[in-house]
View 1 (spheres, rainbow, N blue to C red):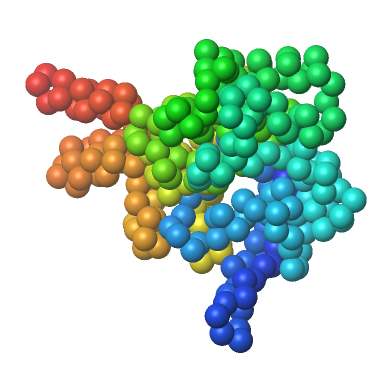
View 2 (cartoon, one colour):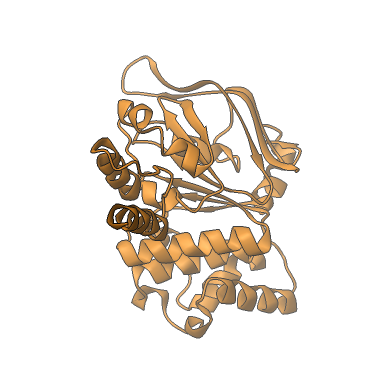
Length: 284
């Protein structure tokens, strides 16, 4: 499968308040396949948001390379093409909403790209439909809930027709229902439209439905694989201040008490089924 993004030996540092620099990455290498849904996990300061900003050239490598669909982010002439291919969604949707009407906000980016009016209309309608906000196209964004605003922000990125969407902690300001809505949309876009979705989060439960989970600590990848492979490494995750989904922790506690339960039943439904089978066997 084609790689959407290739990172080779990435190095990057932030200046701090002293004369020294805060090193984020020293030698990070990573490939992300086109059409995959990847969740990047880590505690605050681990480098996950800095990584996100390298994926569409908001930040540029100090060492190594970031290549997006064959385009080197350090080449200035590639900048516009890269940002058309990779859309960004941030924590606070209010920072991305620029118009007083939902459909006008979604149209903003393609208008600035010089897309013809008829094509803009088509893109706006399709994007709002994709995120379940078509019924709100005439509404004022400031009257929407946080989850609805974030869906509008995602629609605005979709209207640019990117191949990849990077979402940098997009649910941080949302309630549980809003979080679930946004993650469901991200999963749907990846599955149905072959969009590469990169979700930066510190909520373990949001990563359960991803194809791949990358856990980071101190600018390094400490675990990389399918959710069932990563989240069963409970001791490793806890050693860097991370945890596993609540379902895994429940099954682990019961397993430690001798229940012999599978730790890879990550979703609520799978966990419930595992518990049901255990109870049924105990009664037999």
